[in-house]
Structure formats: C-alpha cells, structure tokens
Amino acid sequence: MRLEGKTALITGGASGIGLATVRKFVREGAKVMIADIDLRQAEAAVAAIAGEGFDGAVAAVAVDVSVYAQVEAAVARAVEVFGRLDVIFNNAGIAGGRPLLEHEPEKDYEPIIRIDQNGVYYGILAAGRQFRRQGTGGVIVSTSSIYGEQAAELSFSYSAAKAAVISFTRSAAYELAEYGVRAVAITPGRVGTPIINQFSEELKSTFAAEQLRNRLTAPEEIADVVAFLASDEANAINGTVVSVDDGYSVFKQRLD
Ligand code: NAD
Image (cartoon, rainbow, N blue to C red; front, side):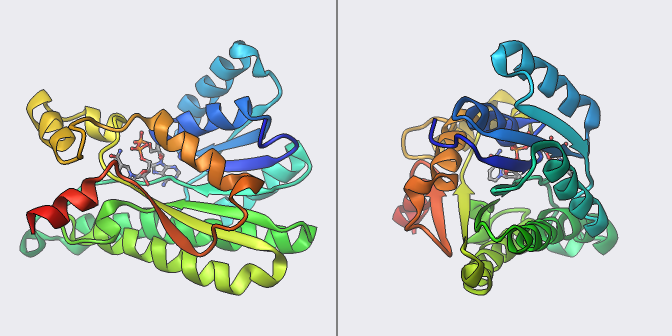
C-alpha cells in the first residue's frame, strides 16, 4: 500500500501502460482519475476495476490532452471527486511516422507534437498549479521513450516530442522544486500494448529481439516502476530519466 492516501490523474489511462498503471495504483491504495480521449473505454475500465473490488477508487473524465483547458478541467475534476491531487502520470500518446521527406507537416508532425509533446507540457502546467495551490508538493511522472534519446526509423516527429518530455522533466523539477514537486521521465522500449500488438507476429518478434532478453515488456512491468516512482520510496529520484527498456539502449550501443 505504498500509495495509500494519494490521488493520481493518469492520462491515457484507458489502455496499455496507462491502464496497467491505474490497476497498480489502486492496488497500492491510491484513488485514480482516468483521463482519456476515449471516454467509453475509460468508463469500461472504471467498471471493470470496480468489479475487482476497488469500487469508488477510480473514476473517469474525457480529455484531449492537446487542449490545455481540457487538461486543466480534468485536474479540477480529480480534485472535485477525490479532494486533492498528489501525482500526475502524463502518459497519453500516439505513435507513428513516415520518412522525413514524405512528410505532410499537418499529418506527420503536428498531431504528434500536439498530443505527445504539448499534452505533457499541459499536464505539468495544470498539475503544477494544483500542487502550488494545495501547498502539498506532488509528483510528475511522464512517459518518454527510447526514441526520445536516439534517432530511429520513421520517428522524426515522435523522437522530437519524446525528447521534449525529457527536457520538460528536467525543467519542471528545477522550477517546481520550491513547491516540493518531483518530476521523473520514463523511457519504455518495446511494450506489449495495442500500439505494438497491432503489428504482424513477424514485426513483433523483431521488436522483442531488440531487447536484451528477447521479449516484449509487459505493461504491468512498466506500471510497477511508475508506482515506485510516484511513491515516497523514490523521494531521491528527481529531474531525471528512468530507463525501463529491458536493455534496448545497451543493445543498440553494443551494435554501434
Ligand atoms: P495505448 O494506445 O495502449 O494507450 C494510449 C492511450 O492514450 C489510449 O487510451 C488513448 O485513447 C489515449 N490517447 C490518445 N490520444 C489522446 C489524447 N489526445 N488525449 C487523451 N488521451 C489520448 O498505448 P501505450 O503503448 O500504452 O502508450 C502509452 C505511452 O507510452 C505513449 O505515450 C507512448 O508513446 C509510450 N510508449 C509506448 C511504447 C510501447 O512500446 N508501447 C514504447 C515507448 C513509449
């Protein structure tokens, strides 16, 4: 029960890494607001988790993280329902890309920057303001990617957005320290969520082989780390990146 008494808002909490983290957080004693653009799936998650014995511990709100007013409203809703906010997990994101010179900027650059980059900035801003109002401190965990630290195939826009998440984390830790706020970014490698599961078995095997132990990471394994980072046990981890890629980055360096 390392998150007992804490309230969290998890963007992209209706699926994949976000949903696994919602489940982990409630099992650790937290109250969780799922904030997702897919309200139907978010509400289905609330019903399922309530049925697992956590009725009242989880609620849902519709949000498009690329619109600041909606992110601010989602934070306000979490505070209205659960009384306070202690943790935001900025996790909503989309993937995808085409070769740079094939880009149509409004299709291949702008949506990813709006959701994966601006969405995290808006989460930091709205939660940071709430933490300051409360005077309680708080924790900001944000999902970057291995691609935030390296160039990769078909990832010009995604890499830019995920690199910004790392930069935001450092700056947020710096700027919000006076309010007792910590910020941490995680860099998943290849995780078995709908983003990856949509691909062919062959491509999934290739992805798995990029990690040192030849397996995709389970979303629950990322959730375990996020719960730790959000807890007081991780009080010394601040303004930095925690790698959760099962050795992917080591493998790439070894090839180089
Ligand atoms: P997912 O598709 O299972 O979940 C993403 C969730 O975000 C969905 O519920 C979706 O509805 C929501 N979402 C999308 N756009 C939104 C918006 N504008 N506003 C609010 N919610 C929105 O994917 P996932 O694999 O769990 O990805 C979660 C995060 O992890 C993303 O930021 C992704 O870039 C990152 N990531 C994933 C992997 C991987 O291998 N799966 C690797 C590295 C990083």
